[in-house]
Length: 230
Image (cartoon, rainbow, N blue to C red):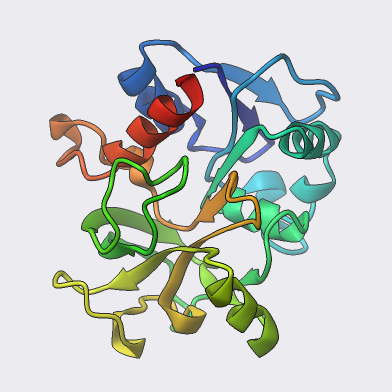
C-alpha cells in the first residue's frame, strides 16, 4: 500500500502515523510537504494531527488553502483514499471535503485521555476489520473537537450512512454524557459520500502496539491495507 503523509508547519503527529502505517504494511510512507503541488501515485493520503500553522485564524483553516490541498482533492476525485485525524479532520472540514465543522470543546478544556468509540458501519475501506457495533479504546488529544453541523446536514449524513464512529461508554452506550467534547449526536468521525474520505478526532495511530498500551487502533490500518491492496 503506497501511502503519503502531508506535513504542514506545526504538524506533530506525522511520525506516529508513519509508525502505524509501517507496522501494518512493512513499507515506510512518504512525507509530503504542504507546498507540494503534485503527488506521486498513492493509494492513501493522510492528514495527521498537530497544530497546522499554529492553529491561527481557525484550526485547519490556513492549511485547507495550502498548495498541496489541490493535489489532495485531485487524488480524492480519482478514487484515492484520504484519512484525516484530529487536525487532519479539521483541515478536511475547512476544505469542504467533509461536512460539518469542529469547534472548541464544550468544556473549553484540552482533552488528553483515553475514550471509547463505537463502530457505526463496517463495510468501508477504513472499517472492514471491525464489525458494526464493535467498541474500541482510543486516545484523545484535542481542544477543538466539538463536531457540529446544521440539523439538515446531521440528518443527511445519518440517512446516507456517513457517520463512521460515535463516542460511547465501555459498553457501547451513547448519550450526551458519553460525548467528551460536546459533539453533535456523539459523532467522532465522518465519511464523505463516497466513503473513501474519513475524518476522525481521536488518535487510533497511538494504539497499534502493546508497547503503546494496546492495539485497539490496528483494525483501521489493517482495513486500509486489506481494502486498498486487494
